[in-house]
Image 1 (tube, rainbow, N blue to C red):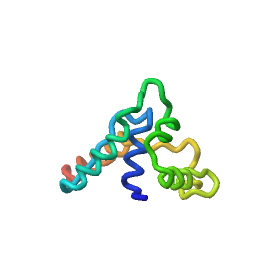
Image 2 (image 1 turned 180 degrees about the vertical axis):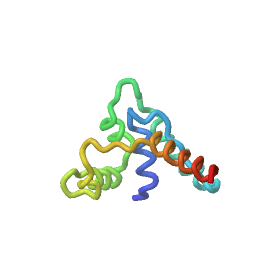
Image 3 (image 1 turned 60 degrees about the horizontal axis):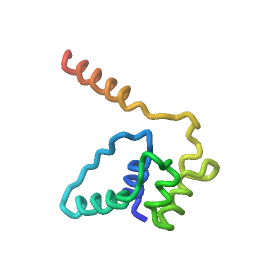
Image 4 (image 1 turned 90 degrees about the vertical axis):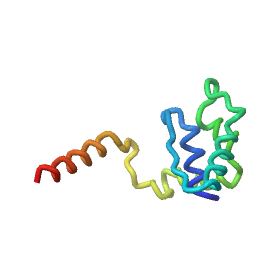
Length: 105
């Protein structure tokens, strides 16, 4: 299973993620991204939750890998706090404050 593809599919299926930005280095990666997005062509996002969307767009192997990744007991992220959320705005603000501080020196 390609983990990059799985991450894109998960992100596209998540109701709290309004936009997924992808970086592509060549035409092949554009084709892969288009193929992944086409899996959602029959999904009714107004009537589906993330689990039912993933059931529609993931292969059996992808579902198995995702289940292992999300396992709260033995998965690779099991040690993260339940309420962990990455705040991209805070990280960006900290970065730009650092840049501004370097300009002033």
